[in-house]
Length: 428
Image 1 (tube, one colour):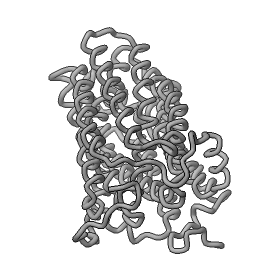
Image 2 (cartoon, helix red, strand yellow; image 1 turned 90 degrees about the horizontal axis):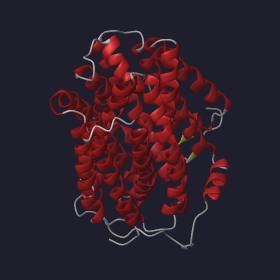
Image 3 (tube, rainbow, N blue to C red; image 1 turned 120 degrees about the vertical axis):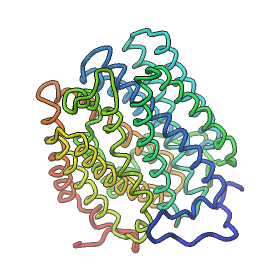
Image 4 (cartoon, rainbow, N blue to C red; image 1 turned 135 degrees about the vertical axis):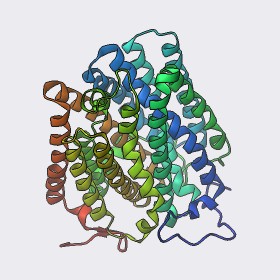
């Protein structure tokens, strides 16, 4: 396959009306990334749980768990923006090879520090920051190649399949972590992530060359991408509503404390911690396995706004319960809503922008999607230390709804967007 349009499969399957649309899997490059992503998704979630629990074990504070995420946010922002610019002027396959290797090496470093029981929060934060730097370049590059390896009309389906893989990883990873911690200890969670990152290198090496389309310049300017974003209110609004949803409505930094104090889990981690971390993925996985209907939705903006409001409502309800299975239910519904929102936001970003800007816009997208939850970790950690976990989660969920409605009223371009015309509908 060349750097142009992907080849047409000989016998593409029909779209599944109720289940997932599997047509993107008929393209070998996407299929290999999809299968490799399953292993990588599980491994990364094992590491996420391990970092949370190890820092909480060392410090006994949710505030420190949130601080670690804030530290990781700095390289995420810097390299996310730079990585997107690099992806617009360099072979995206080579970038994936370099950054995937870096993520594997940093995962090995986390494993070694835990194996030798160095008991250093600073070292954990440094290794986490390095890993996030590589991730910040890897993710926008990976997202920017999707429209190059599947046809444009299959991008929503490809995104839905990708979020299904992510949901499976977020579901299986924390549950596996909850079982492994009492048996093997934290170090082996990091080891499994390192192995998973190495395994992900195979589908990356099998990708065809993916150089930039059109005129190739020596470098793409980050500021040029930001100036372009200012002229795109639709794209900008997808970022705004996601920041609102994540910063106010993502309470994952509180899960270690909630698992022990609210839901009666054992000190040091256990099944309750695994369930809390996995619960949202149940909804994501269900959403992905029933995503055939997404391709029939034309008012993407309306779907995004309604999904985010549902997300906020479920987080508000989460803060009111002390029953673990009710908490799992609310988080699962929230995960489903987040999957719907993320699928349509990604699709708008990938299809409404020309290839020369996709890398930089995906870089901004990575900063928002991955950075928002890290800001949320810090905000929720401080709020929980000042009040309680229940208050922090409930108030945050309510703020998601209020702020989303205000944002849409102030700038209705997202609410009015219709794919049938490719623009906002006046007076909708």
